[in-house]
Image 1: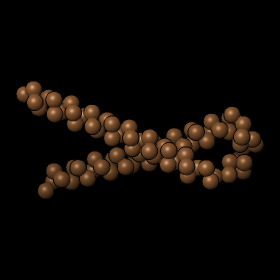
Image 2: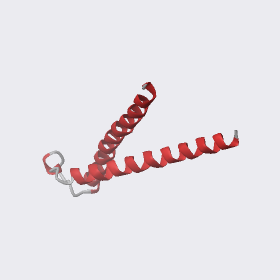
Image 3: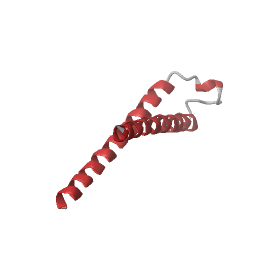
Image 4: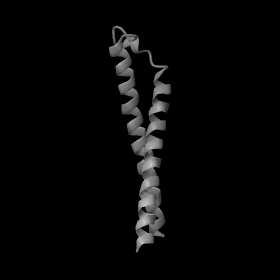
Length: 84
C-alpha cells in the first residue's frame, strides 16, 4: 500500500515537473519567435515599458497555448495505450 502511494506521488511529481518544463520551454520559444515581429506597426512606442510588457504578455499567452496543446497531445497518446 505504501509503495503504491509513493509511486503515485513520484509519478505526480514527475508529471508536474514535465508540465512546468514544457510550459517554460514553449514560452521561451514564443519569445524567440516574437522577436521577429515588428511591433511598431501595431503600437506607437515599441521600446517603451508598455511595449515591452505587451511583448512579454504575448509570449506568455502564445507559449501557454502551445504548451497546452503539447501536454494534451501527450495525454491523448497515453490514453491510446490503454485502449489496446
